[in-house]
Length: 387
Image (tube, rainbow, N blue to C red; front, side):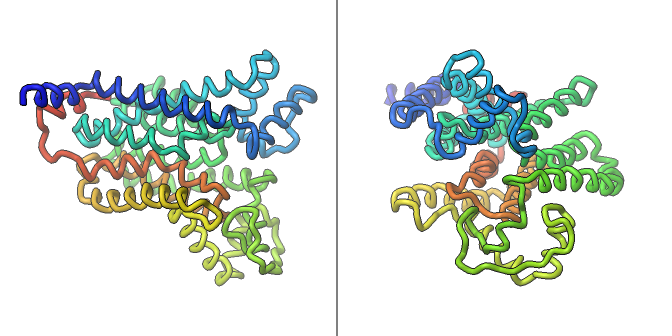
């Protein structure tokens, strides 16, 4: 009994948690590197090609690659310095490790239970398909890590001064030029800041900010009209649910305005509503459903068990959302909703990568199902510290 009690007490300590999580993180990534090596196929090829073009001609082959600059510039630096792609993976692993720590701290703060934070972080590490991007030359690894780190940084702000505004601006810029969907952080961050620091004037600010939507639409319009992967209307002509996979039925669409713009998208919704909403809801089902007919049975079972369990926990946690505070909850919900809407408006990705962009946020919401109503000194004293 004495031994059991000592073991239980040891498992409550943050230092023990750090050791367990670090070992788990190292073990998983050693397995990934041993089994897959550095993945340079699939999406990686286009970033490698852009790096080569940048070295030869000093420019990208298409304007849309500007919004993937973080990864491309890293690959370019590795080529210029002749270090090999290991330096790129090392940077990705470093930021992933930092984001894992940030994830633990956020969940500990949310739930006020350090053991729950440890368990959820272990589960976070165990999501094989999320962590796999850390050994791939994809933009996802850095984008996923930056997302968690940015949210963590927001939660640490106790006041807004010039330095805090500069940090927000720099981090938002970094997110935007890592993946174009980084622009979703702009409305989510704005909402967070208003609800946290300007609560008494929130209604007035949100009313006035309605005009700022025009600025957001301008950025979105630029992204859509940049070409390449920003073509939101192309999947509609082939009825695509999964990007690049035609449904077998080709639709003849007459769009008298510039099709790759917000205006073109609105025209499609108004004049082809049946097609639009049919594809929209099928894409949402693919996005949240996570399974694919071309996946292996083990892949589908693993992904389904993981995500469907998360969805149930998120539903259970709803009654505890307000205990965390509106700023954080609205931020998380906006990021999930905006990412889902973008998928519904375009198409879901073959490997289901889009859902993993909000996977950490779903995990954070799910953890609230285990939030302690009243602090328990033996478990929450450490987790209830300021982030």
